[in-house]
Amino acid sequence: MNLEFNIAVHVLAFLTKHADERFSSKALSELVCINPVQLRRVTGKLVEQGYIDTVRGKYGGYQ
Image (cartoon, rainbow, N blue to C red):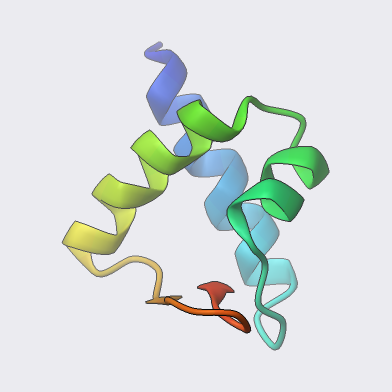
């Protein structure tokens, strides 16, 4: 299996469990135990496909 696929599944499962919360890339990477660069690469693809939402700015993050 592809590492990015495993990260994507892990991130999607985590965000589904915490659907009412928003996480910065740094916080989310620490919570799912991966490198922030890898997280941003994978979440960028997930955002493009419409699986997760992102909000930019001071109070933004992934949801």
